Length: 172
Image 1 (cartoon, rainbow, N blue to C red):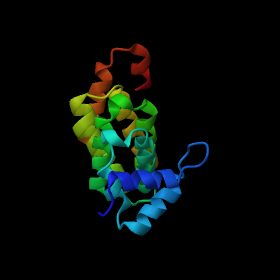
Image 2 (cartoon, rainbow, N blue to C red):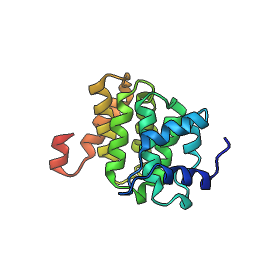
Image 3 (tube, rainbow, N blue to C red):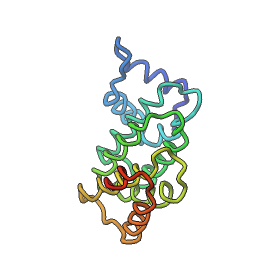
């Protein structure tokens, strides 16, 4: 790959403006110019403790790559799994932002559905897992970017029945 944590952090710093925001588009472009697969470079760093607050930039870049159709199904799954590892440190908006982006792409929507089925609905290890699952499947259905398996729909129906909060249950 040819880039280490220090070099990646220098790249983040170079694309940071005076207000502290990182131009993630320019950063992703530079990664693409210097490395054949920017997603592959970033996936090794996502969630490492020594990347600190840069993890939000890394997440943003991965979302941009997904939106541009530059993430493979396997990379999308790895990205979602790494987000789970970071879940205790992430705001729920990070998950929703990722869901909305991945649901828009025909390359990543199937991975999103697989993640919903194999992780969210199976492990229940992320805060608001049921809401995330319903949002993800709903977005894929709305965008029509992947076929939703009947077994997944049945699992969602079962989960809707199990919801104990009556206000939420009506929304599912």
